[in-house]
Image 1 (tube, rainbow, N blue to C red):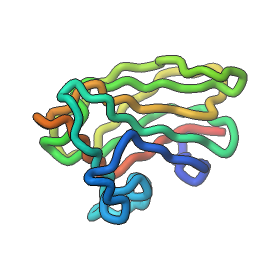
Image 2: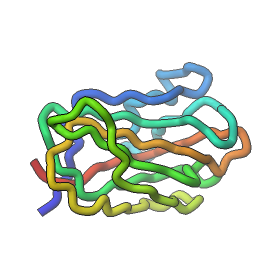
Image 3: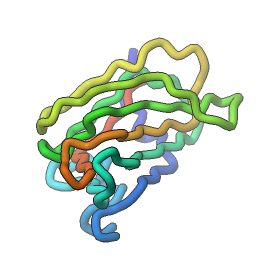
Image 4: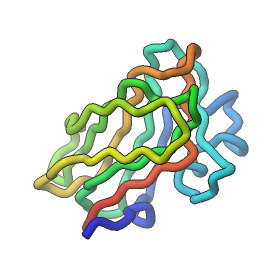
Length: 144
């Protein structure tokens, strides 16, 4: 049965933080469970290069990605890439198209046969004219 893998995360990296204000909009707010805090990226081209990178303390099998965006600042076209335990490079495993709203959105990852040590969520396009992404919550469900 899938459970949250948040406690197994030992590294989070992001492409940017709005105005470099990490105290107000930093990566630490992606998984803090507080609906009042968020990660907010800096602006970029509408076809943006924003991303969230996650490293796990040990190999896991992710089964579901959950995201809560701020409406108007959602990813429009997104990809999920993973790095398997026995590889040094990322492999694309899923494309997904979030809705432009504030709801919790669930994206099933599909069956992965090998354990993952890193994953990267790429936001190829944003619904924001300036290419910003705002995420209030991120969760990854799966198993060890």
